[in-house]
Length: 330
Image (cartoon, rainbow, N blue to C red):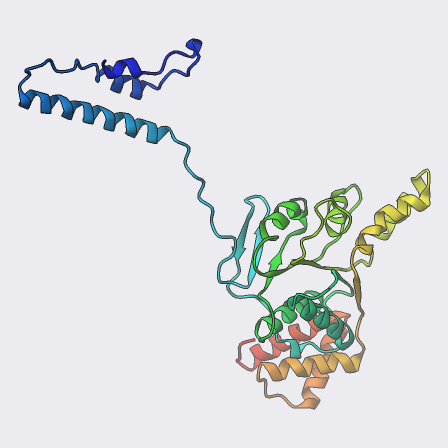
């Protein structure tokens, strides 16, 4: 019996039809069995043709077989990543823009609370999501990055990875959670300048992820966010909900309940002049600026007056200017 008898039948006969490549191989294999007394050389040639045909069929079937998906490792060697929500991938950040923890001045109380919370988490113990809210330029995002860098540089903790997520990518948080939930590391997902404007609804998905969803937040993940607003929404948005809702109390509760998902509320407030001068001196010493206290104090007071504010951000901007005047980098 020739190999053509083994060719798949048509779909109407109960089997799927074969591909053109395989059909061609079968057609070429319609070779009659050698009759008794056939020359041995011809018989060997006959077997060689059969072997060649079978090889062609095997190659065609291999080409049709589904290829196993190649999965790239979730994490590399870096300790910080940026989440690309559109592509669904983590992009390594080799060098994080941060300052040493000891440089941050005027926020000692909140620094101690957040550091202790993060240390507990990095040891595998209980810890809370944290919302850092308050005045602009007072070191909210700098504190998160500085604490991460401080813990990564010490022994006695599990691997701690910082992942930055943009507010526009919050809808992709479930995908990120599933991606890192089973990794052998602990993760802080960090969203800087988190807030919501009128008409936005993405805060609802964030509420579900932080607390109350069916999947819940993985045990190895915390969420840290910074915001200028304590309730993450502008006051006029909350007031509008109160004035237009059938039940004003329930409407406002729905809007502000997102902040309730954060176990820690850490407030950052505008600093006084002595604290501001301490910040300026700390930055000047860090960058090695040789400038006497009297001159530095006078420049700092003048700088703050022209900027109309006193904060860590204003302090470091002054020190950069002084460094440039002294011919140094900052």
